[in-house]
Image (cartoon, rainbow, N blue to C red; front, side, top):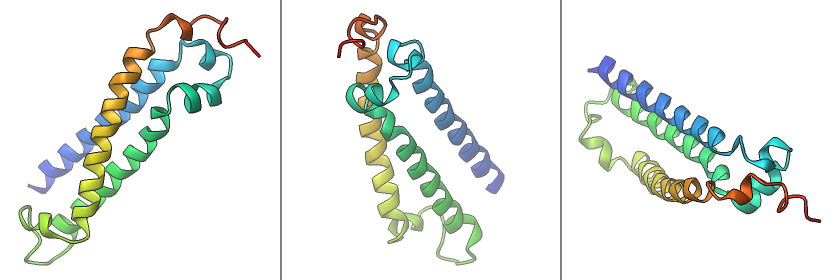
Length: 128
């Protein structure tokens, strides 16, 4: 059981890292990225890029707490069912899940917007 849980956690970690690379590949061909206007690109156009590392940190924190309560503690009360009444784990779990939904919603919006030609032509970005 522990090995299966570790495999699934590793798989989720890999998928989160793939998501981070997806953001990179989403913006790497844009004019602001190629010419070093990252501050303008991130702060003004795609603030979702600031949310991605926070989501990753929340994911890792939640998974570490889950592993701690399910495998590393020797309490009889710690199991898959009772972890959801744990006063330490539940707030972290809830914040991570709500934050993930918000991040994914903004991600879809950003993915649609990045296809606009203004991000690939220098005219908009070279204005003073």
